[in-house]
Amino acid sequence: MPRGGFRKRAGRPKGSRDTRPRRWLAVSAAEANPESREAFVEFCRQVADSGRAADMLTKDPDLVGLFADNAQMGTGAGASVAEQKLGAKFRLVAFDSDAGELEHLKDGSIYALIVQDPYMMGFAGVWYGYAAAHGVRLPKTVDTGVGTVTKASMNDPALAGLLDVSKRKLDPFLAD
Image (tube, rainbow, N blue to C red):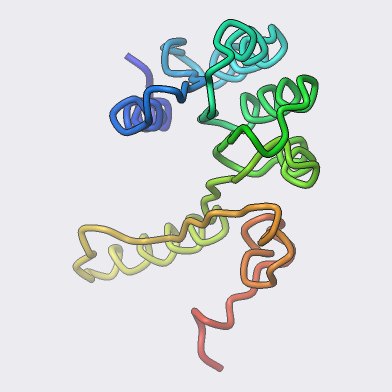
């Protein structure tokens, strides 16, 4: 059984399988069932490098969309979409926001990125850890933030901190 965050990652492809239209496919790392971070990263690298997305696109000309559940697969699928010049008739949605994915978002190969707020994950983790250590009852859920970024919205100042942590502003979270 995968450890730690790997178990949670399995929820991304399950959610995509349960909701996506028939003419959408998912490039997923869930089938890897990795036992370590290194195994997971290597599996993603192999899938991205192997042209799996290109194979899917070639085998099914009626395919209208693809979901990539992590940055490595998003970058690989973005390269396949760009190579086949699918443009506006195809929708690739990917998770995360590494440099490769951002390049494909700029050139239109990726339609949208679903991005988490890693800064606030760390900030809230420490904040709630401190609170718990001092006897504060913690909420059942904490929304650390998630956003959808498209080519049209990628320069929106409100999303800048999700794409580049050095641009993260805490103004809405902390008072003077």
